[in-house]
Length: 255
Length: 249
Image (tube, rainbow over all chains, first blue to last red; front, side, top):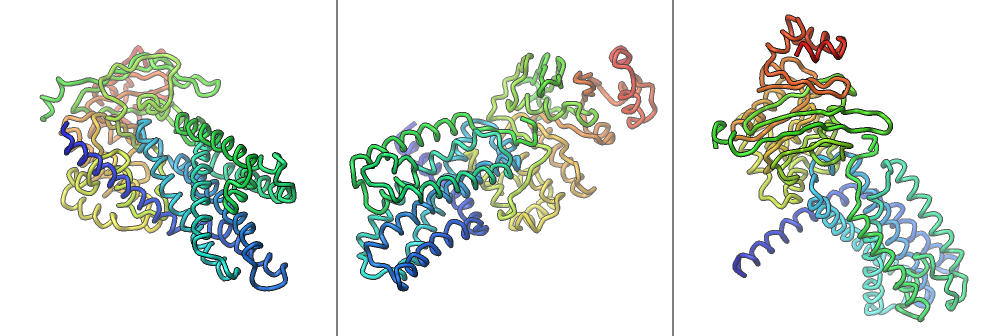
């Protein structure tokens, strides 16, 4: 095969990939089921924090940590409830079993769904950032871009790790319950750990805490860097396991 | 390629498939053969193991024993499952584009149109831009079947393709399946409708208590079951002692 035909073939595959991503992204935007939990909750959190601080706006110092927490929350909820639930839902509907018989097609589907959900996640993060801009004074746009970039990195790793839900023998309903419980545990224990010292390693075991700190302040300490590397490795292993051993048959098929 | 030419190229041959579901033995050494350009039926009572058998031959379930001697690669099998839910937020055309995109193939609309008559094509294009939640079950079922039949495959496995579909769409479904057969493809389908066995099958299998019995024609089946109609033959076969039906066939 000549170089030109190889490039043409790769371009065709890329455009087909983009077309599939567009279809799934549009589907998610048509049914924005995650808006309430993923977007309104952290906006309300910021607004209440501003009110608690005695006004309608936050100082940049107050805002950055709370905004980091909000974005980490958006990353976690979107990964679990948008991407994770779509993976389970596609299996539950019989879509995977009917149309994705070969392992190559199933992997292709996971990457397409990943890209579409990631696009939606970034959109939600940007909307959250725009809304929260009304609650803060004097923040430079360069700082905002850096925060958004770190949010994109954190969410990419977290969403990749979420692929492991495809292995779990769960119906759509039970998956929804399990993820709600998981989210509650992560957020409640995370909020409790925010009072810990930055030098305490336990403060970063929960990805909500390490993610929020990383998004807000970057790689601020060696302990945080170590925690982030360990978490990224675990998420990479979980994601690869999900790609390798994803279940095909819906739970109702007694598989 | 016409039917006669295609027959020489490959053959689908399954032997001695046994499969458990939980602690229940669902299939006991099932054999099935199909050649290119053939439509093969599979009948049996509810719970007889038809779907389990289809899952096995599509590589989605691992049998306890048995062999699949066929030259059809997993990528060359298209499977219409008994139940499939089209996401409400998708247009049917988007579903088709997605399926073809994930298969790395070209335009879904163009490929699907090739298996349709003018009237069926008009229906297909009308459904193309409609959201799933505004279509009836029968319309979705037929549309999904057309998409499955348009896939670049050698073996088409269809689990009750006409279940819940009205007379008009059933007519279009068989029209499309016969066209696939005429292109030299193999089609294996399950059904509970006696007339479908009579009208379209080249031969068929009756699955009972995990064992499949081959019948070359409806006439053979009627003779084996001492019945005058397929419906009564099905009843005779289902209610007979297993040893009697095997011997009779």
